[in-house]
Picture (tube, rainbow, N blue to C red):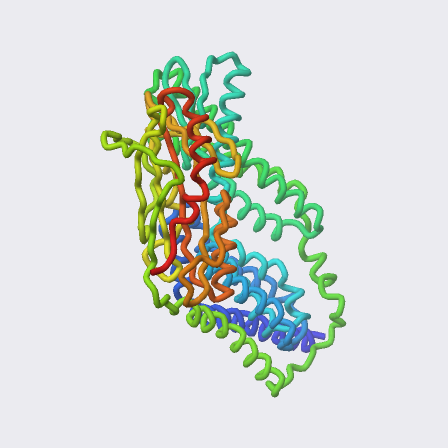
Length: 515
């Protein structure tokens, strides 16, 4: 029995090393083929504090595999089934590259690493490593997309709680005021970092502490809910500290320290409560592998099937960047032309000076016009154009917004959507009424006139249309069109803006072509 046990232990250890070796091969292969995407991903880990935890995902994966070494049964059997998810993730990367969406590309290469590893291991071994393999997806820097939602929730939770306890509060957007001072919910106060950290730690804790699915699921669910509520309570605590200290405490960097201390206490209590239902992992080790009968399988020699699968996986990894380079290196023969004309004659506004302008950087071409309507109302037109064949910039970018988060002078105080987004922007004593939309103007190769002009208000749809035109082999120009007017204009500024858009929107969408 002792000899059989030692033999089985030896085989399991060899299997473990094969798993880790397959993972290293997958990481190296993807890193070489998609170097730019991997570099951007690691740079995000390093530069954004929100994603610092991503550096620990790979070591955690290795720990999970090593900790499971005594329970790994069977031998590696490379399977061509790994080609299916690998092809899907490769195509997803191609779409993300065409649309220039970093999140999609980084999610795709992570899926490629998982698919290659699973393909080299085979179905049986991959089933035993479902959680460690899926855990690798936490290395994708995702979560900042929740910032607006979390900021709004935190502001609402804080103001509602303060009003419930009788404190007088005035709120405008994410800004609110008490008699003792003014407060605002910024990105660092949104709680996104707490949420990401809590979910990551919750997944690890649930995996190493529980066996039953429902306990794992319940603990992870609690790990999602608790940091959201805790962040709201943290914000209330910070405001009250500032309120009762005459705005001398918790108004600077110290409120971040208090917040992390509070979060640490909350997580400690969460894990302490969770430990009361801890399950014995050893009692399930034997049951996790129903195919294991105690006999030790003989490791087959590498044969033609293994090399064939490995070769196919390699080819599947390489075809997507090759296809991408074939498409993006094409440059149109003609030069783009931009011309803005109107259906009506408007007086050019030579004395108009707007202190507001959409912040869209690194565009390939700008159109900026100002004029007055019949009633004297000043109207400003701003069009930023981005070429698909240019490496200068992109339309949909985190840096490109009507108002940047760091701009404390402007804020959005209302919004509605009627074909274009109408927003009211406030700047201290001034308010601006702004209408904007995006459009993607596509051109067939060698043609001067636009093949299609798609207008939309969704940034996601912009990316989808850009990717579609790339796949179709078309050149395109992506544009932001913004029309804005001051709220203190003569007459009814909103009615004037709507009349102008009704008369001129067709002209505004047809400003680009080729010589």
